Length: 117
Image (cartoon, rainbow, N blue to C red; front, side, top):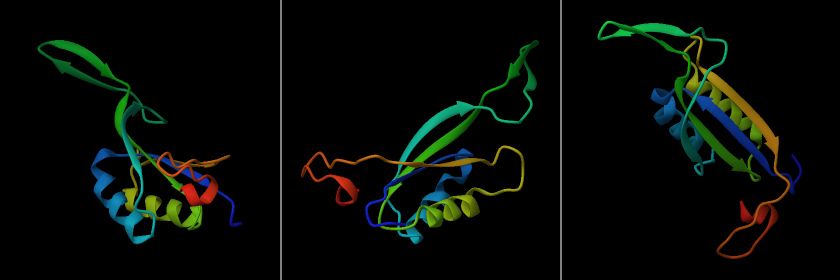
């Protein structure tokens, strides 16, 4: 990875794996992250349930979206840390995406580029 390359690693994982992912990212040298509660579905089928005699369909599952912007450590290290920590071997473990970041600006200092990350 070149010195001026910034990457966004974005992952959707099971909420109960968040603690393990945070620890794995800290151990990989990428402790800064943003976490958002999200709902979604991938290849998992909708589940039917019943409540008070009424049938309902659950087709959107609760996940957490983790975003981690890196420039000083390889994005591949971040991806592997997330993958290992989030893995259960079951459908619904999640997805990880890696995107290039055109620029980053530190609000407090005005620094831009990799120094802002």
